[in-house]
Length: 98
Image (cartoon, rainbow, N blue to C red; front, side, top):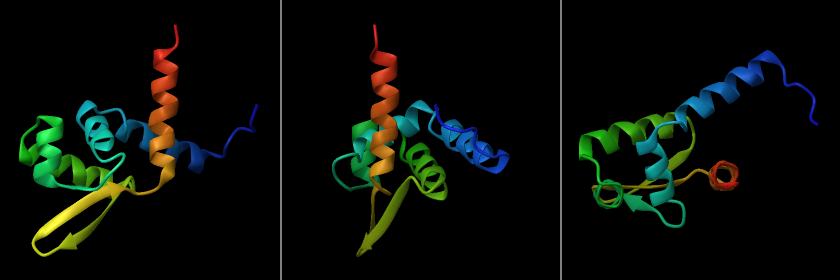
């Protein structure tokens, strides 16, 4: 078993898990898990309003879970790094156990 992280690290872990605990945010992360997408594409994949998706993307971006780049007037979102999909995979595997 790993050593207990320090309080600062535990606080950061708690913040990250709280951010990832929202169903809409999880859907967004899965929607962009294998390709980048703009807001309207994410709205279609997630089935939520544009304002809700935009708000949740802002939260995910602030938490460094997604990154963006612009092409003309459109902003495209993708996972920040491989750690994000690994986190989703670990949680999925855990809840899928019999």
